[in-house]
Structures are given as structure tokens and as C-alpha cells.
Length: 87
Image (cartoon, rainbow, N blue to C red; front, top):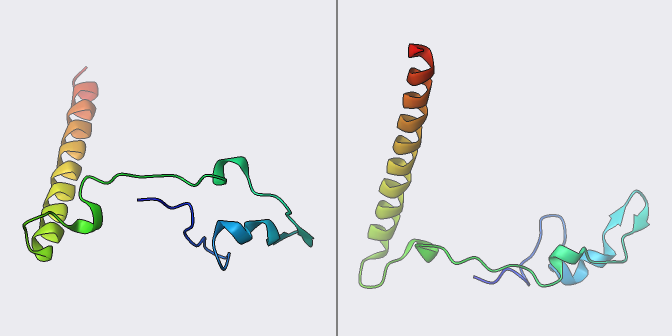
């Protein structure tokens, strides 16, 4: 996904109009270096869709994967905490 022309919160029209943002009563007049080229992000499951599966399956798979990831993270954190308490 390319977000270089995406609208920013509080800035109508995207990064091209960011130079016109007023801060402290003054117009910025420049575009921050990190925003000039935007950024690209390649998601594992873009738009929650998987080729060949109904769109609902993508949402369900994303939910299951996210829940499983959280369970694994919290289990690892709990194990580390228990190791510290046993010492």
C-alpha cells in the first residue's frame, strides 16, 4: 500500500497541502523530510482478503491470528514473570 498521497488528520487534501498548515499563528511553509516520499507498507493480509476465499474468511482468519498472537505474547510474559518470582 502506498500512503504518499493519503489524507492526514486535520489536513484536507493530503501531504501536498501540509505546507499550508498553520501552527502558532504561522504557516509551516515546508514539508517534513520524512513525509516527502510517504511510506509503503506490505500487509500480510491486505484489506483482510485472501485470494480464493470469501471476504468473511479473511476477517475471521485475521481475528483468529490476532487473538493467537496476543495469547502467545501474554503467555510468554507470564512465564517470564513466574521465573522471576521463583528465584
